[in-house]
Length: 142
Image (tube, rainbow, N blue to C red):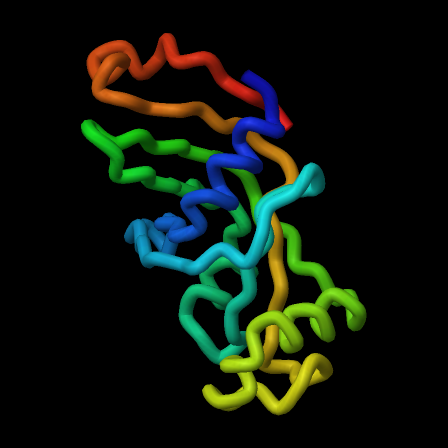
């Protein structure tokens, strides 16, 4: 198993549960991952949102991707977010997700639009097979 397996799993199962910290209170919510490639897992959010404030204060996150199948399989990823202020990337985002313009984003240069990725960390797959041996699941560092 290598990072390409993680990228493939994420792109096939883009709904991601992202855990952040709000002081000493964990917060989790579902995100629709934008895409994953060899440079990381990409997302976007709005700067007026609580999740943005949480991520800027503490960039450490855990991501959980789930494939429902028979008994289900999860991929858990621990890492830190990096905010990316790249005009070309934001143009691509608005082009690929035009619904952003319908929810209050004025365009790619809108300061309310934040793009972030998890580019470094550790991932592993969980199944019922290794349910009681989670610590033994092979890790992928990226």
